[in-house]
Image 1 (cartoon, rainbow, N blue to C red):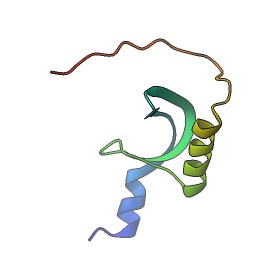
Image 2 (cartoon, rainbow, N blue to C red; image 1 turned 135 degrees about the vertical axis):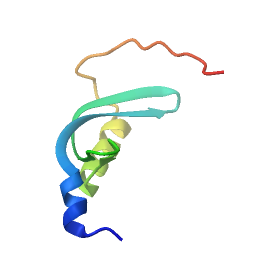
Image 3 (cartoon, one colour; image 1 turned 90 degrees about the vertical axis):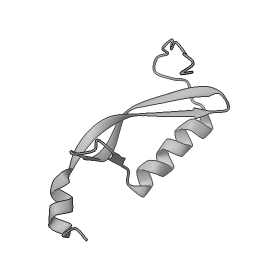
Image 4 (cartoon, rainbow, N blue to C red; image 1 turned 180 degrees about the horizontal axis):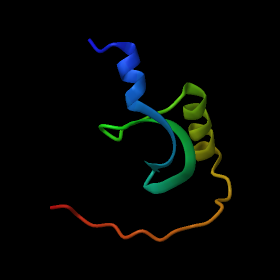
Length: 75
């Protein structure tokens, strides 16, 4: 088990870009506060941040801008 102080040193506060696909639509949310693991790059979100992300997607507000994205098949 890792000492809590060592774990905290691996997590840094950052603003990240969050991507989620819902019903075939891609949503990109920029400048989301997260704790990011400096070794793995994994983002950890506070519960209130997760609730706000869900609300943004659910409400489908007008976006601040739109982007075009190419989709490729891996196989």
